[in-house]
Length: 181
Image (cartoon, rainbow, N blue to C red; front, side):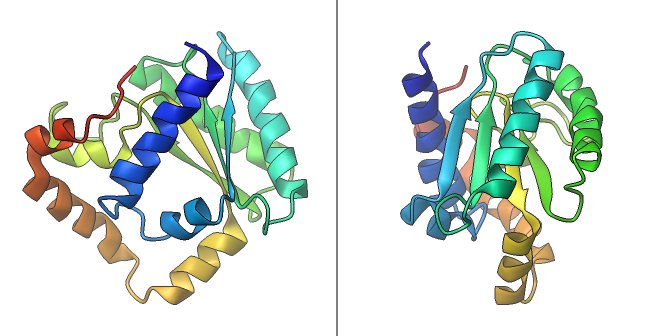
């Protein structure tokens, strides 16, 4: 697939699932204001992805938050196995530290086969973190802090997501018509 199709599939997921189901109440404003940067990595090895991740972390750190507030680094050619993806997150977090961006940027993770520890593979709650392709979401800590200030009970977001997804069910999720790698 070409980059444009991958980005369109990911944007469709952001609009229909993340915003449409209100899985992240902070996503709508950055989407509407076009401050989400979508980047497709051509990496086929984790080491290549780490280089792309370093480049994108540094680029986000340098960017004006009014133009680019967050980045979705989509990597369809590497870490398609969820356990390998999950193991890679330690290296990704270490890279944030190495680049001296701890406390400035952080990484959230999404994967087509996302599975929370202790849940069955088909548990609908896993879909809160299921994206069309393996994706690293680079976030500004300042933006997170502002969002948290605007919402008194951010801990309720996860519980609300579980309730929303339970009501929706697998058939409802599938009815969203989202692309899955």
